[in-house]
Length: 159
Length: 159
DNA sequence: AGTGCTTAGTTCGAATTCGAACAACCGGAA
DNA sequence: TTCCGGTTGTTCGAATTCGAACTAAGCACT
Image 1 (cartoon, each protein chain N blue to C red):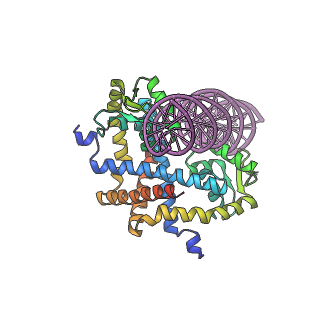
Image 2 (cartoon, chains in turn cyan, orange, yellow, green):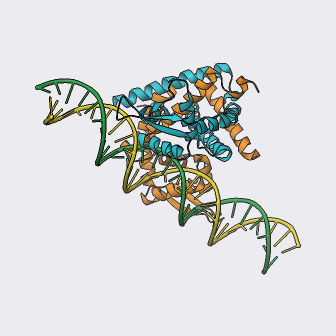
Image 3 (spheres, rainbow over the protein chains, first blue to last red):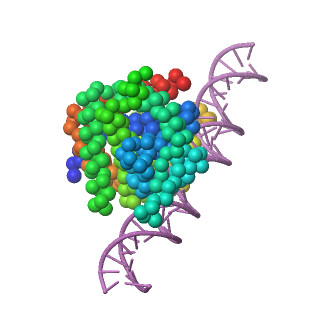
């Protein structure tokens, strides 16, 4: 195995480390601002966003689907939903067809909080991330990251 | 404020959510594989990498610099260095010039473990990330993320 | 109905992170 | 020298995450 195969080129190393560091910094920054301004962690914000999506007309989302979309363990979803239920931002609804499943949906308070937090947050996402690249760069990156995602899922299923 | 300014376009929303999800998935996947194969968390691996960099001829890195490079709180750095010291992979060295500072450096065992783990890990980084994009896409993304990083640091200093 | 396999969600303990508070130390000004 | 503001690293408690074990519920096949 050549050196080139064992290690990374200068360009590759920079790309990889920049990707990791930037994603960490972004997440950290947005998390802190959401907490300071709206008392929501980034995770919690994303849960509210997911529940507000018009994807399902009922507004109900199963715990498992929620965890999968959030890229976390199911137990972390349970924990966070517990927090949000305690604060009255979401509600658990028993699924009538399947006794194992639990639905989660936004309450009025939850929807109101999301609509208050979103403009601030999205302005930040634009400023810090979206506005740093041209439309072409943006779609290029998106396509590449979709391929990355696919490979990760393949790899997971292989193992 | 128009709707376009308050929310994101379809393309933007997809780009943003793809970025966040992919970075989480990547980190999670690499962390799990490093733990399974080499008993190292991704954070710990990155600490070893940082200490192995030829950036300082002495091989010594101050805690504060380490934390800054790792994008974590200083207390998290203290914790992880404690773990690695316990395992004999790194060592603390008192700084002679400045009584407040502590240097950290790799031990022989640490260097050996890093050299064992790196090829596996880097192959994965290539497969899952680097190989999904062309050289042009890669450099474009790197440049954009550098701009993002700069803006985050500016924003941090403003607040 | 009964048996066994799979799925959904929760609970639990361990690991990790964060920020605030703290102690030790440095360096310059009075 | 002495004092004071700034820096360095650590400690502490709270919050969060993970994976494994568990419970309850469906499903298929007899």
